[in-house]
Length: 198
Image 1 (cartoon, rainbow, N blue to C red):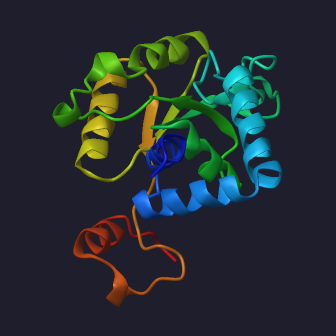
Image 2: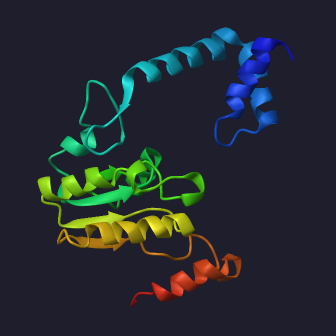
């Protein structure tokens, strides 16, 4: 492949969800219609690079002119409850549910000895400062349920245990529109242990 096409393919292949073949198809489609696809994408990427930052308070994505972000400054949100997530993208998913009306705190990942991510690499200290400064009464832990997520949740619980704050975690259970026979044993065990009255 020609140098610039190969460079574009390699860059696209680094994106989550795009393998080498998908990246190659995307690169060729962009080059086939540069005015329709490549130019708008170039403009959008440049604009995002120049204007999108992480919120100085919660760590969510925002624009430079709106920092702290609208989630942190919205007076209608419950400032006494903070939902702790791994990445800014998690906020988008939780907001889409319409079920949470508090504020957020992005850790920036999860504890992972294998990847050399320890407590100092994540935003635990900032969370502790927020708990006291903002008089937070509940921290909802919304991290993944894998081994690293469980370790992160355990560390968070220990870290916040002396702060006098209620620590909760998302319930575990079956996905919507899914049956028992399609669930793995761990999901079923957690669903049984987190069962509620009807």
